Structures are given as structure tokens and as C-alpha cells.
Length: 292
Image (cartoon, rainbow, N blue to C red; front, side, top):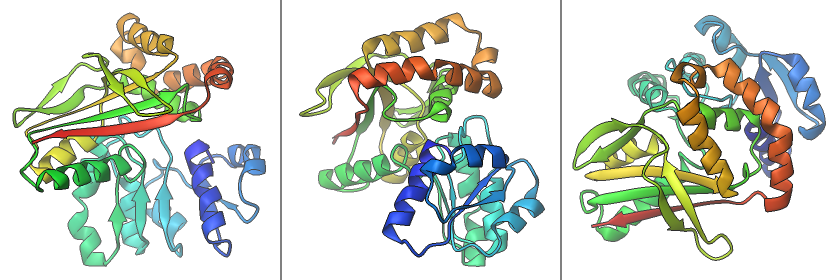
């Protein structure tokens, strides 16, 4: 019932009004609090990602599709919901943006294939659509193996309309090493470095971006034979970028990695963030540059 889940429900309801929709979560109170912005035909189902495989399989049994949007995904490594969906024979997709979790999910490929259950991971905007953009760019260069270097660049004005969970995920990413390919070797670097200015086109313009972890980087590089690949992110007004850099420098890594405290910081910050959003709007943009 968060921002991403709510938007997913809204569009599923618009595209297929006859669908029966269920919202999974730990707290029915949170569901009721968000009820007014969810489609009328939604019902609540108790789902705890840490509740064990049996309980998860029972929660999703009988569904036609599981769409997992319950972030932040950072620091999670067990694809428990996907495993439960496979066990229950229910197709599955998610918007995972945590590399190790995505890799562990893909390791269940043989189980999914044996059960005849389609599963797609990391299929949001970024990561997700951005990987399709990268594949198209590489295809224009001649296909797999033709691209020497590829860069992802992402931009939001304010939060881009995101809720506190995505804001807290950004805080968590400030404590997450950035996986990138450099001359054919997968390396990890500190986040929020290597400032670059990128032009996001008409209506958005040029904005600064900094390195931030994105599972599209290693998966795209490995799938398309790219030697060097990196991802950057930036926001506007620019003081938000400075604030992120200041948080990374000032706060100990152990605090930045604390999911509960970062969620609390995000919730505390939301009134200020929404006030700034009202001034600058909620633009999202991305670009992919590829060199042969």
C-alpha cells in the first residue's frame, strides 16, 4: 500500500477493471490508512516476508500473479516471496533494486522452470526499463560484444513523487558499495563519488549525477558483453545532492545501514521534502550512453 504498490494497483485496476486485487502486508492498519487512494476492489492479505516459506506460500496460493513492491530491498538477500510463489505455482515479478537479492532470485531459475512458473526480477523503471534501454543501445552498436562502455544516468526533481520507503532506500544506498565493471572486471567502489553532469534532454536539461549502486550494471554488462559499466543518480534542487554527500560523510556506516532508523529519518523528512516538491515538481528522467 506504499507509493509504488499503490500505483501498481491503480494501473492494474485501470487496465483490467475485472481483476480481483489483494494487498499483502504486515499491518492491516497501514492498509486502512491508505485505503482512500487504493482501488475499491482491494482486500487485505496478511504477508510477512520474514514469516517463513510455508506462511508465504499459503498467502499467495490461488493468486494469478504476485507483484512484489515491498521495499526497501537493500540488505535483503533471501528471495523468500519468489520461492513461495514458485512453490504455490504462481507467476511472480518484483521491482528489486538490491544486487545480491536479485542474484539469489535468479539462482532459482531452474526451480521456476521445473515448476513452469514465470518469474521476472528487477522489472521496475530503474532497474528494469533502463536495462531494456541499454539492450536497445547495444543492439544499435551491433549487438552483444559490440559495446565497450555503457553508462546509466538517472535524475529526479525532488523525490519524483516517491514515498518515504524510496527515500529511505536512497539513504541505505549511501552505505552500499557501488558494483561496477571496469575493463572487464567487477569492482566495488564507495557511493556518491565521481560527479558528472548529464543532459537529460528538453524540458529537464543538465544535472549533476553521482555514482550509486544499481543491479542493472553487472547484469547488463554480463549479459551484453560490456567491458566497463557504471550507474549514476542525481536530484534537484542541487542542495539535496549536497545533503546526501553530507549524510554519507557525517554519519557512521552502521547508522546508514540501519533500516529502521533510515525509515524513521525518511518519515521525519517528508514534510520538508513535500514542500520542496511543491516548488520544483516531480520530474523523472533517465538516459543510457553506449560506446563501441
